[in-house]
Image (cartoon, rainbow, N blue to C red; front, top):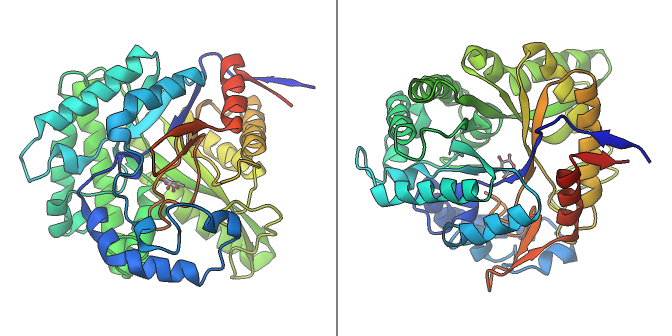
Length: 416
Ligand code: FCB
């Protein structure tokens, strides 16, 4: 038995995002859900989902599974949820602010909603849990979506105004850690504007390029706004990072390109406007010739994603050259039966520790997610939570794996 000690003051916690947990939002996603729920339910019925997934309520074959609705009712139950996080020894929590609540109409601030998030921050501080605040986790107010979302340059100014308003408001000024954008390039731009899988469901290289450019500008203006208000703030964005492996010469070239776009493009564009690097890690991708996703898939999650903990070591090592603190802003598993989660967390932490021991300045780990929640285009059936949510009663049940993670957090070390 070896004890792997993590650096002093290491952050241990979990992440959520507003739309996935709060309930009763009104934004571009809620509109899109209404239009797409039937289609997604139809697609799910062709996907041969295993029984342990089909057993769930809401049933993946029913359209209501794809409507965020009440979600986890975290908007009303955040204190109870933070009590759970506290009992699990979390000392940090990542959550996002819902722009559509704060500015439901252009230029009109909803002070009640700002007060709500002030309360959220206060509730975390009362429990000695450091808030890590995401300003944009994919959803847009309806008026922003109507003007073309991130396709429209005006959204950059609008986003800056929203960020300015928040960071200058009482209760927000002393928030130290800010994440401007969640997975802006690789997931959002690609899924929303290239693959057409997420709203607004477009498929255009030109639009993808435009959105990417505007998101870079959006990040930079937000970065400046936060620093103008709080020079001591630590600001970054959450980057979706994939560990690409290549087999053969052609795949080797493919890997260089894949890395350059997927893992480093946004990062390089914003490196002068980043106090830390946020690393979301879920995927390993084996390239063979010009084919991708040639993974062995020996172990997979309920989402069908390969479990490949070693990948986190490689992506962290690749970040070392930037000489910035790194936070693992997301890493997690959909595992409805909680049979792989404990091992998943431990293995990823073991590899993250190896990266730390080789000089990568990793300062925190956020498990995705604190709660089961609404998974974008999959709906409610994927169970990512340390805490199970019964969507009928909204009851919370702490999973066994959460206790294993709590022990690691308490001891700031991992036994392997
Ligand atoms: C990430 C998203 C997060 C969640 C996880 C499973 O890409 O940032 O909101 O959906 O995937």
